[in-house]
Image (tube, rainbow over all chains, first blue to last red):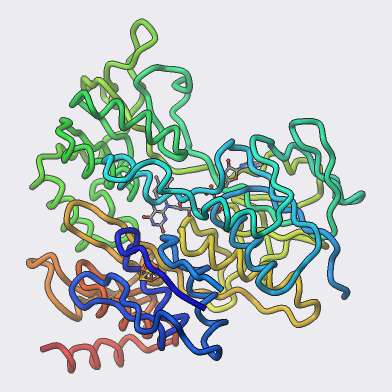
Length: 64
Length: 404
Ligand SMILES: Cc1cc2nc3c(=O)[nH]c(=O)nc-3n(C[C@H](O)[C@H](O)[C@H](O)COP(=O)(O)OP(=O)(O)OC[C@H]3O[C@@H](n4cnc5c(N)ncnc54)[C@H](O)[C@@H]3O)c2cc1C
Ligand code: SF4
């Protein structure tokens, strides 16, 4: 699995962090998403898929 | 219960797409028919009043998924077709193109449409903002630096005021309540936001009802307020709330009121579910029936419905912490929970004067919502106080303790 992020789309919702805290974080100042692990271990796959699905800005793309 | 062979989803936007995607991710390989009245592939609405209206994004950037991702879902995709009638006995949906589609499970995700002022539907210069076409039409109108009157000062009206000012329009925001935005956010933040709009040169008219759009030669040239006062304008945006798209369910036996009436599982009846703006469901955590017009809710409820369809007897109630954001000028406003109707308010970080803060809202001695203005991470942290029922006393005491 490989994750890419479109930072300009991100609306700082933080839903991705709630869904997969080990893979996503947010910048302090503006809340834009920070990708902690672009190639996460398999144990994270389900959480990452949820994060991408629930991101209200469609900012997270997952290639499998 | 056995796994259904076919799922029909009416409404091809955020909630409908989320349902379809989740079904596939959960391994459902039956037929999924996704029916969308609009001709566009599923697209996102929040950018319409932001990046699309201001012209900072090309229009295609609102597509929720690219062609390959959409094709990967192997959908029976019917765009440019309306679901027109439902027969729950025969389990069949009739479309506007005359075709009949049968289902084992039906998901209603038909959203809402803007409420209009009577008699203005075909008047040039009168706008509503819900679709991509609405947004590009309004954007074109803004290019002429018009005098714009916005009827209704909810989030949508306030966001358009912000973009229109920055595009050089002369903007009047008319609200029938005395303190616009205070109905959702309370008097303190309502006042803060009205102040921000006035600082940016928006004329905010409060406590005024628009009685009529003034028309001559088929074109709007202003509005008349109750009491007779008129405001001249080149363009009028009507943003006075919305109406759920449920008319097509008439006679089907699916219960509708303010939206499709669902139980706590988002189910409206045997084999019938609803998700997104159109769904009115019983939120078990709040102990109330609610209907939410938020982008995040559309995605979350779509996911929840897909899972429940496949879960049989193991379905789960849908009890999210509602989340909404709004961008106005350089403010990012984030709302976790439901501040409307709160009986307690406290700024726990930052301050009203700095226009940078976290505020908690309480009801019946419990935290009900957390609102952030330009304090993204602290607002997300405060969400925990809403997600896990927290006593107002404890939350405000703890928060004061950590405030620098
Ligand atoms: C301009 C604008 C800005 C917004 N900004 C924000 C924001 O900043 N933050 C936020 O949280 N939310 C925002 N929202 C709200 C958010 O966009 C909605 O909550 C979300 O789009 C709901 O998705 P949905 O799929 O439930 O409904 P909709 O997006 O309304 O989709 C319903 C779809 O069903 C179609 N349809 C209707 N009837 C039929 C039928 N009979 N047959 C077939 N198809 C049908 C419609 O054409 C539509 O495409 C905004 C909305 C607008 C309009
Ligand atoms: S959920 Fe989406 S919009 Fe929100 S912070 Fe994550 S990437 Fe950004």
